[in-house]
Image 1: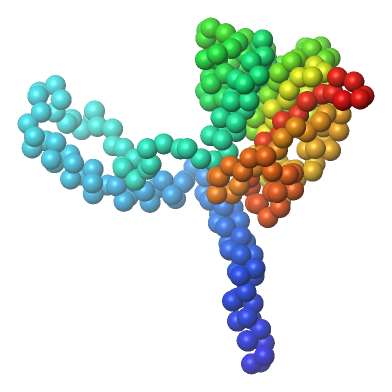
Image 2: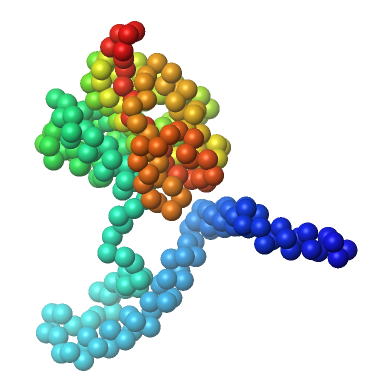
Length: 286
């Protein structure tokens, strides 16, 4: 019995074992938070708002005592309590979406193609960055109403990209989108192979010598139905077997960007973001 206890203590003191336990705890905590979110309750937001309530009451009293004009007096039915913003940072300058949008926009700006096509990326983030210096065609299964100059929209199921000719696109991107294909989350047909058929379609439409900028969650390979999939880096490289990988970068669990590393660097990452830059060879000797 004493030996058994000592072995457990030694295991707990082992940094590798402690890291494993910590990873399991974080995974279980994420699962519990997801369950809460599905029911419409976010315990993190609730706790932050409760923490901010005394400050709101204090500030409301101070504001009233400062003698605002008649139009700007606090009225109950005009009140709009925002209780948690005081505890937040000035903005977000890390994480997958921040780094991937900046990573891809910088690369496209350096190459300056005549036009660019995007499939499924954030319009109010990455696509907006590109529109400051070039026209963009956006393809998505969901509708989009926009009168923004330079933005062309095509609504279609991008799994096959049937409306795009083979080898016709010089510059194309899909950031944090392929992991959702075939899970029904965005009203698309349920299909376990849809993400790989989409990757094949991207490879098909890319012009020889062109560039594909592609990102997906990377880490422990799995599906978190119906939210998304998480891929191993090697799975993505194999799926684009007809293309050449130019560069790979990784956003880790902490939200930090590691540029120009090797696929496989995501080993040990639970939910990171892999940034892949591919090209299509112009001939067999390239």
